[in-house]
Amino acid sequence: EQIKKGNYDHFMQKEIHEQPHSLTTTMRGRLRDNDVVLGGLKDHLKTIRHSRRIIFIGCGTSYNAALAARPFMEELSGIPVTLELASDLLDRQGAMYREDTAVFVSQSGETADTLLALEYALENGALCVGITNTVGSTLARKTHCGVHINAGCEIGVASTKAYTSQIVVMVMMALAIGADKISTQSKREAIINALPDLPNKVSEVLKLDNEMKDLAESLIEAQSLFVFGRGYNYATALEGALKVKEVALMHSEGMLAGEMKHGPLALVDETLPIIVIATHDACFSKQQSVIQQLHARNGRLIVMCSKGDASSVCPSGSCRVIEVPQVADCLQPVINIVPLQLLAYHLTVLRGYDVDQPRNLAKSVTTQ
Ligand code: G6P
Image 1: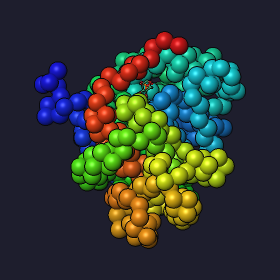
Image 2: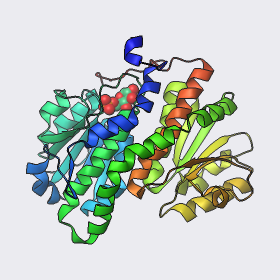
Image 3: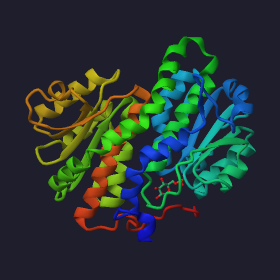
Image 4: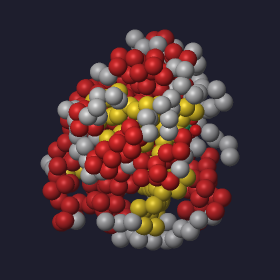
């Protein structure tokens, strides 16, 4: 087992640091001449473009990856995009039609809830697309078409590299679906040009490792942690909080910053640590005002911002700042999750918990 871990102490740590490589393999052979080629989808693109809705379905981290994908999938495809937690879709027996494209996201391709939701979508006549890391998995076999994320084997129970590769696959999928849409061509080209450099940007953000360890030391005793995000990074807030919850066994909640004043604000005091994701995008000024409101209530703030923005997100210098490299807005969630993965990892080690086999959890939940 130690051989498989290489120079790392844990699989989760190894998989976090492997992301520049896993993202490279996810994109390998798929970006060509200003275009995206996804072999597993090409015969179905026309049907997808004509569908009346794209529904993403998944559980846990895979659901969060779909949440990260929704804004740009909607933007680049022009098709309404909805999201379903697999178990909730089944509980409700939610509406699903022949004109729908149902996209199932699952690292293992064997999660029972996701597979049951797939059966349900097949029965209802939807076009079923699979996004998985596991060649030959039930999901890969039973869907009509799909894309492998090619992130390499993920062993740590807490998903890390699969999350970032899932997002990149969904970016590529959005680019492929939106290929014939004139109004978004310049944005599309900008993303295609930015993708090859993404692994380098991830290498850059991984250099925050010691800083995140230091932050984890300051949070060891905390009872709770809040993470606020919005827009492209609403998913980052949920996924960052999920990582902390899963492995560091600390109560942690990811929340939509736009909902802060409708409840969560009541919990803010000088002891509760709050991470606010405020990297530069269309929501930046809204996040600046969230920071001001939290500041006015003496919140214990940790702000994630784009490099060079520290003084504009925290003019008083009283909050802790995590500066990350800026990339195209729809790729920013791939960068922003990395410091939070590192934070969850270090918090777990410092609190003395099992990193790779967290209490009560399984890598793949194959029963309902
Ligand atoms: C379990 C794992 C999570 C994972 C989820 C979905 O709960 O502990 O890490 O995100 O299942 O798994 P999947 O293989 O479908 O992506």
